[in-house]
Structure formats: C-alpha cells, structure tokens
Figure 1: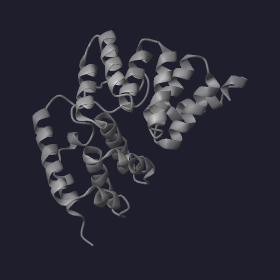
Figure 2 (figure 1 turned 30 degrees about the vertical axis):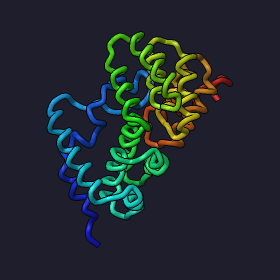
Figure 3 (figure 1 turned 60 degrees about the vertical axis):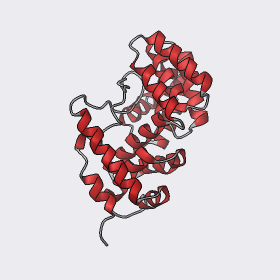
Length: 247
C-alpha cells in the first residue's frame, strides 16, 4: 500500500518548521515552570511561513479533519506524524483528545510531534482574535502589562484555556505561586489533557511546600504525557523522600 499523499507534503517541509509553532512569542523555559511550546528560531522566518502555508493549503485541498484523524491509526509512523502535524495546524478543538492520545504513541517522533501539535492547537484556541491578543500580550516585555492584557482577554474570553496557562507562567515567574496554581487549575477544568498546566501545578505546589500535592500533580502529568523526562525525575525525587510529606 502506497503512503498517503500527505506524507509527500510533510517531507517537503523544512526541518525547523516541525519543531515548534508559527514563530510563537512564548520563550519561557521548562526549567521555570513546565514544558512549553518550543520557540521558533528567528532565521528563515519567511521561508518557514511560506512552507507551512503551502502545506496547509495542500492538506485542505485533499483532506477533511475526519480523514486526518483516521490516518492516526495507520501502521506507518511517518503517516501518523504527518497527520498529527496537520491536525495541530488545522484541526478543530475536537482533535484535542485524539492528539493527546498520540502522546503515548510507541514511536518517539510521533509522540514528540503530538506534543508540539497540541501546543499549536492550544495557542490557537477557538477564536483568531483571542489568539492574536494572546500573542500580543506575550510579546509585551513588561510583565505587569502582560498580566493586565491577559486579565482583559480572559474577562472577554473566559474559556480560553491557554490564556490562563500563560498567565500562570507569568505569576510563577513573579513567585505568586498561589495565583499561578489557581490558573493552572482553571486550565485543567477547561482542558484536562493539558499536560503543561498539570506539570505547572505540580511546580507551584512544590514551591509552596505542598510536596504530597506536587507528587500527585506530577504523576497525573506523566499519565497524560509519559515523555516528560524532567517531571519523571521530579517524581523519583519526591518518592524517595523519607518524610511523610514526600509521599
């Protein structure tokens, strides 16, 4: 059986187009809070965008969302990876669950692509205007101004889970761990498969000295995405603690 045409489209993409979103402004480190979307490199931005635009156009001309979802069950890992990439760029919110299931794919590259695709999906949200406002807020160098922009955005789009997540990251950087935890919990109410917010919640609890709650949150993050190596290490450390709060 020949490979789906989407594999040909996928193979034509430059490698740097596969490692992150469309030049997202988010550059916060996993060491600060959790694994976030990889920041795209600055060089070749126009080339990347053109290649991704062509890929999206080709896929939209040939595939429906349901067809892409069916490709996720193919035996060929490259077909699954191409479908995952396309769903991250073009899928509706309904593809969140199938993409999250791909985090457990036996092929490492498919699982990694699924994580990147989910960040792309989450940042896109349900509304282009809200997504654009989120990008603008995160480009603001002044943290307090960025927080104010996110407050305003969430007042108008209270179901935009990624806006809560990005506000949690800012609160965390300001060491406002209780507020960061509250925003992580808001994310998880809206999107229980958000491994970033789940891991972030564990980091907040850890900084607050709530070690048992942190361990529980980290374990849940690994149930969603078993390839969070730094979180797995956190679990091993907490499980090894002799005091009762470490268990």
